[in-house]
Length: 281
Ligand SMILES: [Zn+2]
Ligand SMILES: [Zn+2]
Image (cartoon, rainbow, N blue to C red; front, side, top):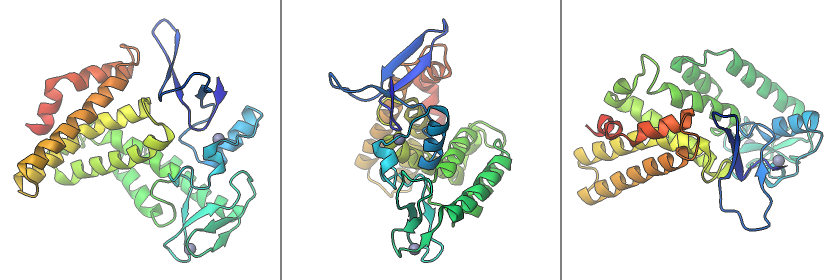
């Protein structure tokens, strides 16, 4: 299959080492099927570099050509001059292009951009990826330098999403009891979903994991708002219904994966009544 930085096919391996290819969005007869040869979670410069070095071609897909990476701002830096704009590559297909603020037109050379990314990557690689505080403090210290959706932040957010609700001292029972924690988990899921909806659209496994993590805190938020009388009973029921749909979509996608895979097992877990009971009591 051909390559695109926004794929329409995902691959998985079953327990007999058979490969399953399935489309993640509707595909018309004659349309090209794309998988991604590079890491979808990387920014354009990093993806194009690895494609050129290891796959021997220059990717000119829609995502690569767009400095904002389809409005996700996955590679954007925050402007240090006006602190309002996003600094983006002027020519995203040119590795040595200058970058420019979309608000005040302040320019950076690619070398200056590299220095910031190097600092960011170094801090990311050397932090403890299983420790919530390390990741939160990493994001805090770089939040004035990069766009909130920056690919390194998005990767850090995926780790946080996994940790909030699994690792002590942030086991699920603890997260559910603490409004600060479940609100944080919900905000993380919403941010991840906004990126996944664009870069891994449709029935992608990444979206399914995010949706699965999101349905619990989403419904708990509805319940809390209703109990505090911030929303009517009608709106409460509407939101609970939305939460159920989020859960069902996650189950539907995860169930497409082999039953014995982590995704297949997660689908079974989400299907259980006790999953919702733990969030809604
Ligand atoms: Zn591309
Ligand atoms: Zn600026």
